[in-house]
Image (tube, rainbow, N blue to C red):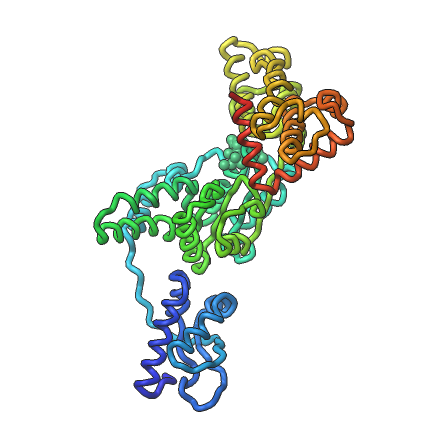
Length: 467
Ligand code: ADP
Ligand code: MG
């Protein structure tokens, strides 16, 4: 022991205590692995060295918390010195053996009882259909797929932790994140995996906080809640965008993240918008999300969509011809869930009628000719005008008032997206030059991808249009 006097010993203890007050709870594991390396009260202004047997812990504390560490050192000892770390593998730190929690025991017992892997998968919250084998990779998802596979081979690697999968609705984010879970279960049957939706996480948290009146109860229930999400090797949190602006849930996600990350556990998030479009989350949480890697899944091209629906049909035991697959893939071009839904509906109706699907009856079953007509220019103009509180005539004029310009650009966007009018057709409708229309449409479309406020406007107008 380097500390010779009782006073030195006390100072060290004081420092550790202060450090724990100043650092977030998840970092305490690393603090517990520290030991003094040089006498604190040597009468020089040399650096103060601390030993640890944890290389990752050293690296992490130095990188993330050096300022707080030096401040805590000053607070505790009144000595202003740079603090540095050295690795000492021989160092034995007394560590309390964590007691097995009820959840852990339960998990173990359940695992033993499980008769087959299928039960195990659903115990972790995984849907059996969402495997790598059933995922059709295209240019749109190649990068996300590759990283997902690497994580499944070796979960917890720093460069892919956390893995943030983004992409709009129905493009396979949940599928891919669950595929990671399935593969890990197969590769490493002893690892504990938990899949949860952010909303479920948040609701459970609030329920726990709200239903407990007495503090002892609350502590116990919070401990259970935390065990459930922190005593795992792989945590998959879906639809993470839900937490934005929900302070208590954000805080809990932050602490859960830190606890898992520092223990080298793998975290995967899925979100229907890219990280760059998160506007409200606190910076410290955003920076955590950015520590690992983000992969964005885009809309698959026609060929990939054809393959997806053909594969789906094969699994569903109601085969379809290439022509029908192509028709469906052309018609349902932005959301795979809708594409599958269309196949389900058409194949169900065809099997009732005891016929095979062809392009003719598919069009009828799905009422495809009516689909495009569902939206019309009049509704789009009147809803956009109402939304921005302007007159339809203003939209069709050359007026430049801000609200009019807004109403006009969203109206152009929806007319193009929902009615699939060509640019010359749009130009006639809006009484504008067709290059102006094209420019406005493309500009808005690309802005929406990263601008949260604009996405909300699009969603709200769409809701009004659907009524
Ligand atoms: P998201 O979570 O992005 O909203 P999902 O993962 O729920 O989307 O996917 C919606 C449906 O589409 C699921 O049934 C999923 O199996 C299917 N799907 C999406 N992408 C693919 C793909 N590349 N290959 C096969 N099925 C896919
Ligand atoms: Mg999803």
